[in-house]
Length: 270
Image 1 (cartoon, helix red, strand yellow):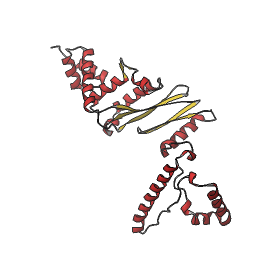
Image 2: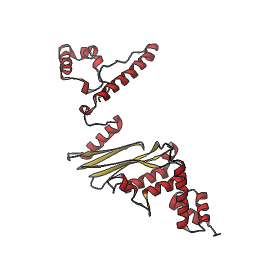
Image 3: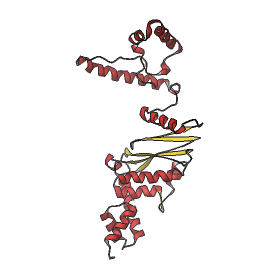
Image 4: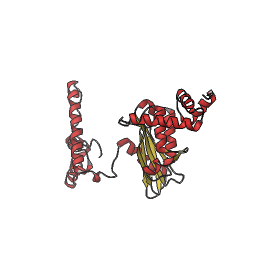
C-alpha cells in the first residue's frame, strides 16, 4: 500500500472539495495515484446521485453574469436540498464558477456539456454530489441578449435579467431599477393587458378572501377593518368604469372619492 502523506490528502481536498477522510480513502484505494483517486471520488458521487435522484432540490443559489459590453447575460440556479448547504461559502463559490462558464453558452445543454477543469459541468455536479452528500442540479438556465442587459440579485434566492432594446441616459440605472421591481413584485408580464382573464379572476377572489379573513381577526380585536375591493387589476377597469370614477372625483373631490369608492381601490397593480 502506498504511503499517503497529509500533504497529498490536502492537495486532493483542495482540488476536489471533498472531505479529508474521503480524500484519504480515495488515495488509499487508488494506491496514491491522484487521477485514479479523483475517479474514485466521482464514482462515489455517481452512487450518491443515484440514491438521491428522487430527492427535492428546492434550495440553492441564484446568480447572474453579464458580459463586458453588457449585451448578454445569464441567470442560473445551482440547486441543492437544504438551506444549510445553500448558505455555505464554498457552495456559493461553486455557483459562481458555474455562472462564469454559463455566460459563454446560449443554452443549458451546451453549458452542461462544457468543460469544467477537465470534466463536463454535468460530471462536476455528480462529483460534488458525492462531496456534499446532497442532490445538486442546475435547475434554471436563462439567457438574455439586447442592446443593454442589466441584472439584480436579491440575496441568493432571486436573480433577474432585464434587456433593453434601446440605450438611454442612465441605462444602467434604469435596467437595475426595472430588475429590482421585477424581483420585488414577481412580475411575469410587461403590461397588465397581457394577463389572462381567468388568472385575474382567480387572483381577485384569492386576495379578497385573504382580506376578509384578516377582517375577522381585526373585528374581534376591535380594530379598523381593511377595505375589501372589487377589483385588483387595471385590466378590470373598463373605459366606462374609469370615466365614471373620474367624473365622481371631479364632482365631489378627492376625499369623497376615496370614501365613496373604496371598493374600487386597487390593492395591487397587476
